[in-house]
Image (tube, rainbow, N blue to C red; front, side):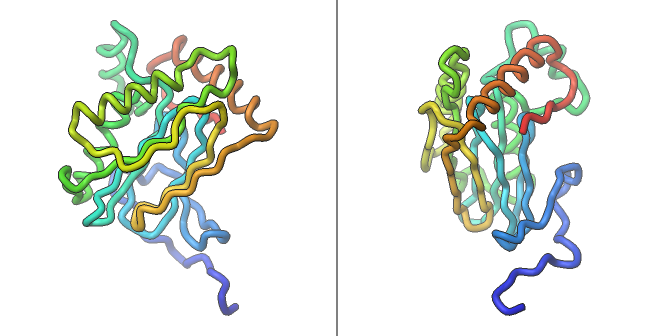
Length: 214
């Protein structure tokens, strides 16, 4: 039908290393979509959308503006606790659940895909204080990522962080376009409760694989 986007018979292959990520056709946006969960990251050089939902977690959208290669991560905690890094770093297939690893892994994946470090720009999102009684891990994540960018000399092009609301984030790596929508319904409390459970599972089981929250 004229004017209606039709799903392609076969989607273009993902970049090496991201074959495990679930992709699906989004008829609303007329493109393939990848959902990034906590502890994951994804890089793309094709017309598709990368999405996630953030409470106190933070996502960085990093893009080579000249070569139109970009990616998104999603992390819950700034850095491993003292004494945890050696054991956790040696785990096979570790998740990028900590900001210190999530940022490094995302940047390296963009460079491996053909991006150049001197052409990268960064936009950051999330870090909301979604429940008053919840430890303000969101602010810790915000402080961490800003400090990381300053230390690494990476330009911060835009930020939508803090406040008390969860966010839905949609990133289009090729164009660099980003949509952010605040979530102000009963889903807010559900999201915050999920994050609290996730924090407890990280504390009790810091090495095993990703936990799907949303």
